[in-house]
Length: 198
Image (cartoon, rainbow, N blue to C red; front, top):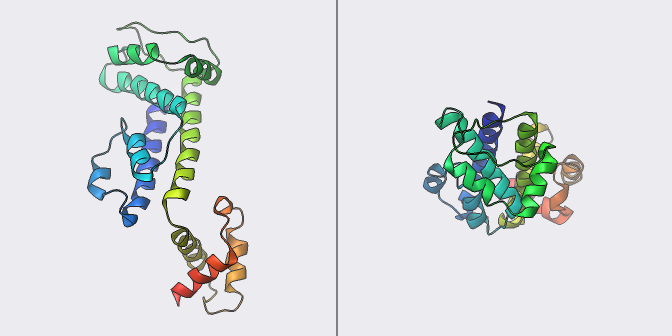
């Protein structure tokens, strides 16, 4: 069940990221609604014009198929899962072994779809890798002025300072340090975002 919950949470995270692209007309709410675990990353790649790591995607789909065996096939290995194991590249197989800390063993159809602690750790690690790549994709897909607006709105939602306060931009800059460092928002961008609130 831990693997199923981890995958469900990751899918929800990716869909939340897709929702951030709707106001920029990069994707429609209807398309997000029709997105499933099996294609959510590929939909993100298309909408954000981003390329996610192929090894991480293959291993995500492997974990998804293991989960499917438990949810839809009474815990027995399916043909789709056997094919997924067989299609792993050497680098993907090596990464999988490193994550689960066991030698790769391709199951046979009808075998129990076993998931140990290593499989759960691998699922979490793969989700973390893809999450970081999705965050990087969002940084490029969403305009910088929108990120500045988000940062400024976040600050004023959590502080009583007025946007009219002459120290507001400096306060916002201090607040976002550590939260939005990857964006490297400038004082000029933050100042323009504060002015848009007035």
